[in-house]
Image 1 (cartoon, rainbow over the protein chains, first blue to last red):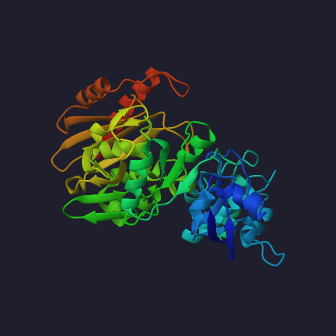
Image 2: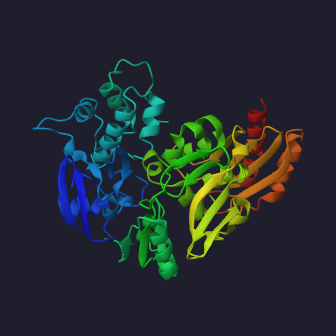
Image 3: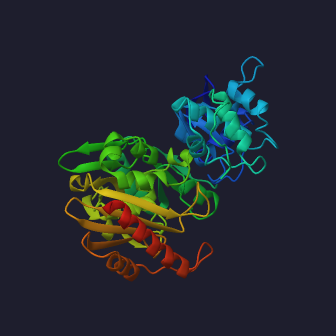
Length: 161
Length: 273
C-alpha cells in the first residue's frame, strides 16, 4: 500500500508492505539505520522514535499505521554537522558506552524534555523506564538529562535504583 | 519482515462491522499493537487480516457524560486516560492502574480496550474496571450489547467476544466517580514489568469495598459485597477465598497468596485513612 509520512521534516510517499514495521521501514526502505532493533518486542526501547509528538517503540508500529503521520528519528538531532544539545550532554557526561541504546535513549529524552522542560530525577526515570542500557548503569544518562535541562548543579542523587 | 497479512483501516463503524462479519475468524483487531505485533512476531498469532480500529470515526479518546459516566473508546491509549482531567480528578484507581502499566512508550500506544480484550490474567486495567463496575459496550452488524466486566472474562485469553464483534467502548458508571482507590502491583523491578500479583481496591461513597486481583487466577478476579465496617481479617479471608494462584516462572503460589494478603491490608489502611 502507499503511505505518506513526514520523517525528520521531509515528506515521503512510499509503497510499503502491509506487514512491515515502522522500524524496518525506516532502516531498510528509507535507509535511516540510526534507529536500532534490540528485542523487537517492545521491552528494550532501542527502537524508540517520536511518532506524532509521542515516543513509541517503532518495532510495535506498522509502517502502514503511520500514513498521514510525522516521525522524528535520531538522524533529525544533529543539524549541519553539529550535535544537538541532548547529544552534547550525553557526550559531556559519558552517558554512552557501547552506544546501541543511545538513539532510542536520546529520542525518549527529546520527548521527555518537550513535555517537561525541568524533570526531576524521578520523572527522568519514569520517562526512560522503557529504555534499557546494559552498560552505563544509568547514572551518567540521568546526569546528562539533568545537565541538558540546566540542573547540572542539582542536589538530586542520580542513583540507578 | 513479519509473516504475511493484509492491513486495513476502516473509517466507519459500518465498514468495520462488515469486515468482521465477513472475515471475523481470520481477523485480528489492531489497537495499540503492543501485544498483537509482539504476538505475530513471536508466532503466537496468525491473522490473515489485521483490522486497525484507531482510524474509525468516533473511536478515539475518552469522553464524559453525566448520564452514562466515563466512556473509554477503543482507540483510547493508556496515556490518553492518564492525561484526562476527569480521570485525574474522579477516577484515582483507573489512573493508578494505568501508571503501573509497562513503560511510557508502550503507554503511548497500548489501549485500555486492548488490555482487557487480550484477557491476560495479569491485565493491569481489569482490576480497576472490575472494582468500578465498568461495562463493555460491544457491537457487531447483528447489533449491540453490554456486558459487565465481571461476566466478560471466560478464561486465560478468553472473553465473551464473538469473532464478528468489537469492544467499542468501556463505560465506567458515573456512580463510581469519586470513589477512593489504589493499585499495588508486585514486579521484579521498579519499572517496566509484568505483574507477579496486582491488587486494586475501591471504596465507594456508601462504604462499599471491592477488590480486583490480577495474576492470581485464570482471569482477573473481582471480590465484591465487602464493606468498610468489616475487619481487615474478614476482607483478607474473602480475597483468599476468591483467588486460585499457581506457581510459575515468576512466583510460587504461596508467595502470591502472601502478597495478596499484604496488599489487601496495606490498601485498606490507605483508603480508610
